[in-house]
Image 1 (cartoon, one colour):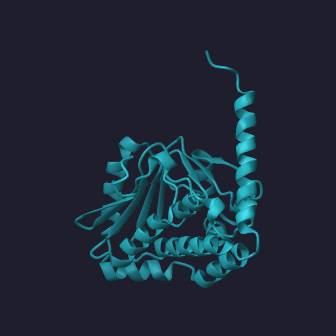
Image 2 (cartoon, rainbow, N blue to C red):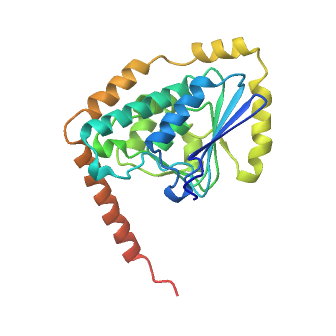
Length: 256
């Protein structure tokens, strides 16, 4: 990707706002400037009846950007997770419907972002994984349990199980399975639905049907991320995943 290209593409056509992650070379991982830009866009949105979140390239979002992790302090990481949690809350409590269109890997904070949306569309090849508890982080946990139920959330989180799109649909994490060529027609239909009520009524209906657990969710993130050794826990998890991936590659039959 050209370094001059925006990492988050923002386009508003009439009353439909589209936000597109644009770092496909990093699987659209959430860098700090992307998170801050996203928050600014949501805070300044006007005349929006539907927002769409998507990612360029093969994957929707690989979650937290681990670039430069070795040089971060626990305090740096705590601040970044707090800002991600605040972004998730803004998406979840947006005064207009938000739709996620996901393909490929949907991991960590990217999966939390997906779960925070009103309609959650995935391609048949999408796969969802939330590894935060491997380094003892509570990000998104309560919202996931509210969405798919306590038992479903525990089953998905306890061993960082990767969940394919079809199963995610059964759980309630995915609302629609559709391939990218079908997304325009689907989003047109959702935009029509989003305009069904007067703007004030939509805003109030979404507010009244959202559980107000923002302070509890933020406190859980601070309590878990604030434990000493956060950076070392993430580094240990990254080394573990690198070792597992190496073992998988070694076990795979050679390709001629």
